[in-house]
Image (cartoon, rainbow, N blue to C red; front, side):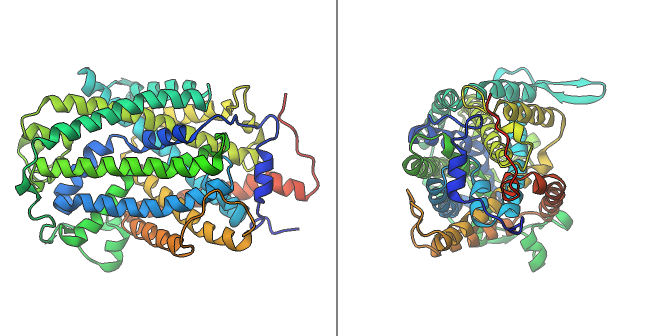
Length: 502
C-alpha cells in the first residue's frame, strides 16, 4: 500500500470524479465569464489607495515600474496556473494540482493554506466594504455595540447577501459580477481621464528619487529580509522600487481564483488560460495607468505618509487625496462609489473560490464528504452556507487588520507549489493533453519561484509565525481526521465509497 503522505490522485481519476452524480458542478462558464471573475476580484479598493501610498513612501514616480515588476511576477505564476488548469480542469485550483503531483499530504497543506487565504481575505474585504458604505451614503459606519461587543453589521450583511446569491449558481453570479465590474472599471477610467488633465511633467522628475535611509521596523514587525540582513528600511532609489513591488504585488492577488472555476467551464482547456491571462492583462493596464496619473497630478513628496498637516499628517494618502490637492473634491465621492462596487465583487468571488476549494477537499474525503453534495443548480449549498456563516462572524466581530498579511503569504506559497508542480507533472506525465503549455519550462517556473520567494522574504516576521502556527494546526487535523477518511485511501483499502446522489 502506498505511503498515504505521498499517494497521488491521478489526473484521470480527478476528471472522472467531476462526473459523479451528486457531487457534480454545472458546466456553464465561458472565457468571458472567467475574465470578469478575474477582474472582479483583483480590482478592489487597492487600486484607489496602494499606488499613491507606495509612491509617497517607497518608490516615487517609479511606482509604475514597481507595478510592472509585480505584474511580471504574477504573469510568471499565471503561465503555470494556465497550464495546470487546462490539464487538470477540476475545482480546487492549487489544491487539486498538488494532489496530482506532490501527493495527498502536500495537497492537504495547500488546501488548508487556501482556506486561510480566502476566509481572511473575504472577511477583511467585507469589513472594508462596510466602512465605504458610511462614506458613500454619509451615514457613518454601519456598526453597533451589543453587550460591550462591537458588531459590524454592514460587513455581515454583505456576506449574507452574496452567500445567498452564490447558491443560485456560477452563471447568475457571473452576470451580477459583470454589471458591478463594469461600474467600477468605468469609475477607474473616468478617474484616469479626468486626472490626465491635471498632470504636471515636473512631478515625474526625478523619476527614481535618490535613496534615503528610513526608519526600519523592529522585532516581529520587521521583514524577514530586514531581520536576516540586519538592515534598516530604505526608501526610494531602486531598492525602494523593488520594495514597492513587494507591496503592490498584493493588489494583483485573486487572479488565481479563476482556476478554481475550471470544472464549471464549458471548454476549460481553451477558456481557463484565456480567463487567467486576460484578467491579469486588463488589471495590469489599469493599475499602471492609475499610478502614472496620480504621480503626475501630485508630487510624490505630498503623497508620503509623513506629509500633510492636521489629520492628513501621518495618514496614508490615496487617490482621492491627490484629487483634493488639485481642487477636484467631487472625485472623492466617485472614487468611494467605485471602491464600494469593487469590494462587492471581490467579496463575492473570494467566497466562491473558498467554496470550490472546500468542495474539492470534501469530495476527496479530506473533509466530511457529505459537504460536497450539490444542489439541482450544481452548487455545493452546504459548503456555501457554512462558509458564509463563518466569514460573516469573522467580518462582523473580529478585528482583521493585523491578520491581513496572512493572505499574502498564503497566496505566494500556493504560487510556489503550482510553479514547481508544472515541472514535476511535465516529467511524470508528458503524455497528458495540455490545452495550454507554459513556455520555456523549466525556466519560467524557476523564475516564478524566485520572484514569489523574494516577495515572501519581504513579509513581516509575525506573518511567518502566524502562518507556521496555522500550518501546524493543519497537520494535526490531517492526522486526526483526513488521513483516515481520504477517498483515495479508502479505495486502496477496498472500501465502498458511498454515493451522495438522491
